[in-house]
Structures are given as structure tokens and as C-alpha cells.
Length: 247
Image (cartoon, rainbow, N blue to C red; front, side, top):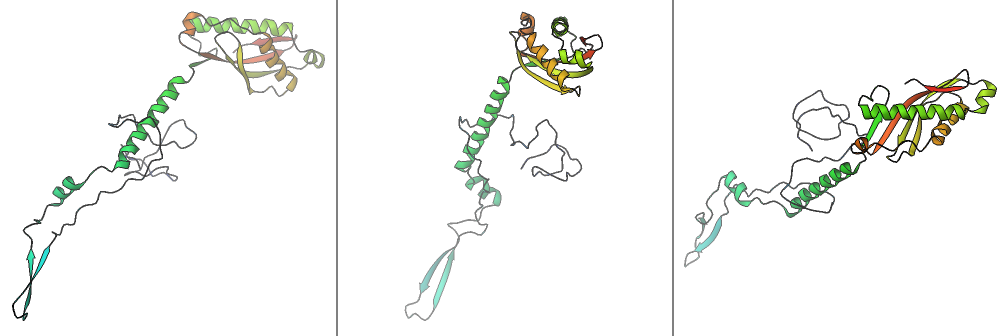
């Protein structure tokens, strides 16, 4: 159950229960457990399953009655005396405030949520800082210079090792690659974002990227800001047996 801050149109597939309708947002594919950025007054290092909340029990609004039996000497009559003096009636507020206590399992639940939130924060802080570079996004001088040097190196190596099969069969086309580079200049991963439709050209492009490594190590200014660079470029195999990149 969660509390929402504003109302929206009712969702056809709600993930949680709230006091009003609200459409969710975010980048997670699967539904995530509810957490909060507010600090709790309880601290725990371990995470346990959350137990459902228990509603506090209120004392009955009817005062407890003490009954005593009095009989006469000849047992001809029996009377019951009601004693209400020892249990004066209390208001509901007095009963609630005076008798309600936080269940012990609830303190564990709160501490568990605190530990879960702390674990999520630590995991987020440990994620590598990745900067994505394209010809459009590389505006900073250090980014633009690194991207241009990287492009020139691949074009030079690519034209030296142009695929023989592409020359022989006169195969031309373009493809889009995403290349993840580590601070030492070595390639961590290559992904084809858009295929040329020709397997020979796709394989040749990835092989050329590998042949050109290691690239220049990150400049100190760049290394202070990011842990990895993801460079996205479109590569073209054009007539004249040349490999080039325009964007």
C-alpha cells in the first residue's frame, strides 16, 4: 500500500493499492518493491521478509463490571450489586493512546526497509560512470578530440584491412556500431545497433574495431569524470574499397 500525492485517471493494471488513482513512471522493466528516501529511527544491517501490519486493538468502550452476590439470612432473596467505581469509562482517544503499542515485528520491518534502501544506494553508487559519445553529443573539447582520434584510427586500420570478400564481390553498405571502451583504451564490448544486411560487412567492421585497439588511454580530465566510454558511429563500406564514418 502506498500514499499518492496527486490523483490521475485510474490505471487498468495497478501495481499497488493507494488512497487515490495515480499513473506510475520510471525506467524499470519489472515492478520494484516500495522504498523511501526518508530515514527511519531504527537501524538494521540485515534484510528480512516484511510482515503485514497488525491493526491495534482498542479496549472495549463498555466498562468492566464487577458483580457481587448478596443473600439474606433466610435465602429468600438474592441481589446482584453492580460495582462500576473501580473501572470508570474512558474515552476512545484515552484508550487508544494509553493502550496502543508498536508491535515488535513492526520495528523490525522498518529497520529492514532502511537496510534495503541503504543496499540500493550502495549498488547505485558502485555503478560505472558511462558516457555515451556520438558526433552530436561530443561537445566538450576533450570528448570531441577523443572521438575524432578514435574515428581516424579505425578508418586508417579499416582501409588497410579492408575485407577481401567485399572487394571481390563488390559489396557495399553501412552499419551502426556501439563500442564500449575502457580507460586503458581496450574494447570491452561491441554491439551492432543496425546491421548492414550483409554478414561479411558486419563481421569485417567488428574485426577492424578489434584490430585497431588499444586506442588512446583516457586523458586525465576525461578519466576523472567517467569510467567507460560508449562510442556510437555509423560506418560505411563505399565504392573504391574505403571504410569511412560520417556520424
